[in-house]
Length: 333
Image (cartoon, rainbow, N blue to C red; front, side, top):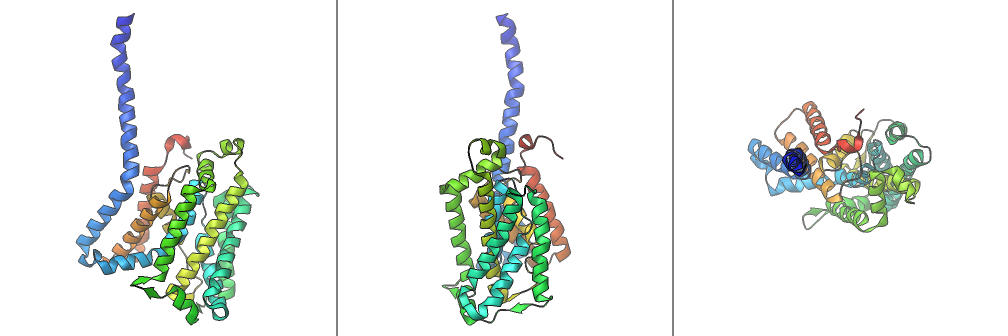
């Protein structure tokens, strides 16, 4: 009997070792995908355009990616919790409009009503999802239409210019060669990292993404956490609206249109799966750099603007395919 066991044990253990090795390889690919992809982008675009790999272009990339970074920071919490928010582009537009309309009287303090309106929009989304039990995709799809409609109603399709010197001096100026918008974006990134890394709220978000029913049983206030994370995203969208308004010196009805794709792509390419339960702010920053470099490189290489959206879509699908945890999802519908 013992001889039989000895003969069969190595054969039965081989598939286990093979399966474990394959899982480790897949996990290594998931972790290394963002960095590998960014290196590939830099090499390809530097070959296509020598001006791509330069200090001036790097500064341009930082400035271009600030609005995307600020909104992606908030979206990271939402996606880590297993939810989604596709109304964030419309919230950015609403907040930019509020900043533009109040900058004349409030100057730099126009940031207050802009962020407050953004947080209010996020609160509406949070209440619909947590209290109303509406799936986050459906809820934010509806509010996206509402928020965008509000912008169209008040602007009538015409841009609202920002002429306040106090507002522009605060948010659109440059200090030591670094735009204020970039400084604000980096400061918010550090703040978001600290919230995720050192607060109970950050751990609760991850727990909800890992298993909402288990989180409820362990005493985590799931409804409250969901409302807070949507409010946080709304407030960051409000800040993004202020920064975008300072950059373009106007609020338009088309502002933030299509931002949802770039934000989701940044978070997912950075390694946060749409299934939730995993992720980090550092990875999101890396994902934002990748998407910004991709857009910047395609523009410098003269890629057709309509083709650029197709390429971004392919990148998003590829990232989802690599990062999704199929064991956790179970049945793919």
